[in-house]
Image (tube, each protein chain N blue to C red):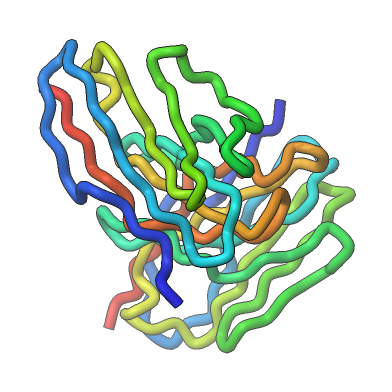
Length: 113
Length: 112
């Protein structure tokens, strides 16, 4: 059974700091990995999707890496802003399952002005 | 292009009642997945519909059921509601199996 773990559970940083969120998964047979953002009480916004054959994806100040063999992914946020405050979730899609995401419990990020 | 929409936004039900939640998929998408997210937890996969057929189910009892219509919109039905069913219910659509999923805003269900 696939298990996804995110560390840390919560993180508080001053504005402008660069930060790294970690995600690990137990079964390396994944099809892709997605990072999502969730604001309180809201739905999920997809940030980055990395296919299993890729090593990283970048969008603006965000960079996500994937090491499939070791079961790890990181989300790097550069020059953090108060508007980045949210919960960040990673999810893996297992090969042959067809879009059934297994999520971690998320990292709650607070960026202080 | 219209994104994924869900209705209602919020719902309060009494234990033992039945509820129906609705989801309209994004244009061009034929796959809909439903997830349950309890407070402080990550979403849990309930089931998925692909071209009107169920394509897999998570660890949820049979009182959770669903439908997908010819226009690929979907319903989630929950019978005999329990207090633990209180959660945010998320719908996601994609243009096929194993494609990127796009999530709706969710329906907040409270069971009292």
